[in-house]
Image (cartoon, rainbow, N blue to C red):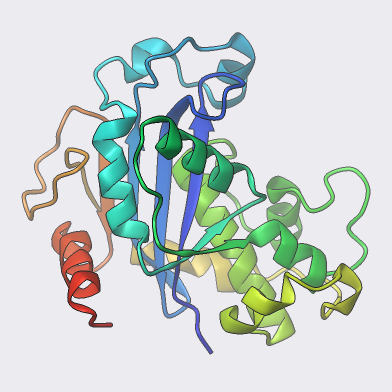
Length: 250
């Protein structure tokens, strides 16, 4: 059953979805996080106090970070050819609007909404919290730092993998299932499985920071706000992945 995908989450500086100030990506391979990447982004825009109160990212924090055009090509390279998970449509729309605003083509990928999966996978979660990411992870027993882009991306991946494990419906089928009415989903009872989800943490213990748009095997800390984390390989993974995608290899 296919369990390879990339989960993404974005944070924004204000109500304009193009004002991206943080990007988090987690590459899942064989049902576990394999590679993580995060970058703060200077949106060249104002920071609304409401947004800052949610994610804690300020104008000062991103002042020396790359702007969106500098990370856009990097994002496209990582997302091309992948199934890309986001919780609700927000991240897909925000990324699309930001790319469009700078005249940059979007990635060639298959988007899949983890909230739409959750609504079809599990019954009885209406009401306060409902199918929100924090509520789902709370029920599943997965702990994370809400409204941090990297942590939220990983949490969206947790929701998808828990849904696959509890419904026995794989990613290929979910790509079709989310187009059908909610009532036609598996609609099983959600159950906690913290051992299954929290057992990931040992897979991502090596941390390296690299400039956005550049990847090499030098793991010395950098000061621009970008981070790459890996369990078994260094930061050249993404570069090798891109080369395989360009050559048509799997």
